Structures are given as C-alpha cells and as structure tokens.
Image 1 (cartoon, one colour):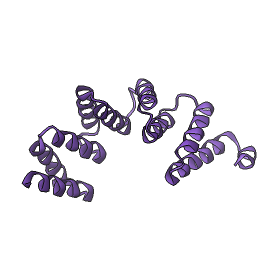
Image 2 (image 1 turned 120 degrees about the vertical axis):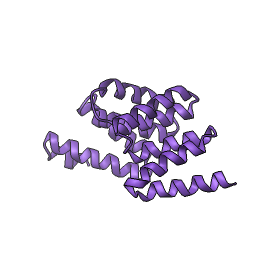
Image 3 (image 1 turned 45 degrees about the vertical axis):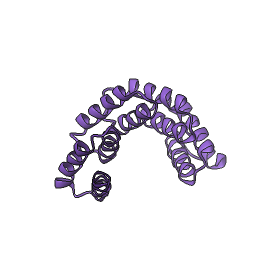
Length: 167
C-alpha cells in the first residue's frame, strides 16, 4: 500500500486510501479501517464525509462515546451541507444511548432535509416509533412513502410492522 501511495499524487492518494479503508470496513477489519480513516483525516482534516465514516466505524466497534464525539464534530462542520447520513447516524446513536428527544429531533431534521425521501432515516424512525408503541404511526409513515417510492426495503418494513401489530 505504501508503495502505491508513494507513486501517486495527493488526489490519487486520497482516493486510494478511501477505497482501501472502505474495503477494510467491508471485510470487517474495523480497527484497520479506523486507522486508515484516521490517516485520511490527517491528509484532509475535518472532511465531514471522512469524519462521518470514522464515527460509523467507532459505532460498529462498540465505542459509542468516540462515535458521538466524531458525529457531533461532523455535525458542527456540516450544518450547511446536505448530509442526511449524519442525521441518521445521530438519530440511531441518540436513541440507543437513551436520549430520545435528541433522537426525535435528528429524525425530524433528517426527514425535513430529505423531504421524507431518505429510506434509512424512514426505516430507523419507523423502528423507533414502533418501539414506543406507535406502530400505527410508523406503518402510516412507511405506507405513505411506499405509495410513491415502491422501494423494496420499505415494503419489507411494512410487512414486518403489520406482523408485529397483528400479534
């Protein structure tokens, strides 16, 4: 890897290192991927995309404290950017760490930012709603989205929720 990076220019290095870090993540080599994304962050400090991915990796590794620090830094850096993935990550993290109001705010902000079209935000928000006994609201949200998107992931969630409600 170092040989490839030495023979490349800065832009190529960034692309190569990003692909390498993503590939390590795909393989489940979380610690190596974290190391590579940290290296990327040194090359291109405060890149919100790199930081968001680094936060996701810390989350996957179980270090939710570090993940939150990075997500919050990313949020501060990208307030003027279209970044629904970050809001989805914050929503899930806040929910799992017991900060329900913050999770609902991140969900609302994410849905607003995407006009309700981001499937990951919709599915995770519906999951949160169903976990607080608002399965009907979650089902309505998903069915409304499915009526125009016909996204299979939404249909799967609708079927899962209908089974949960009928039990």
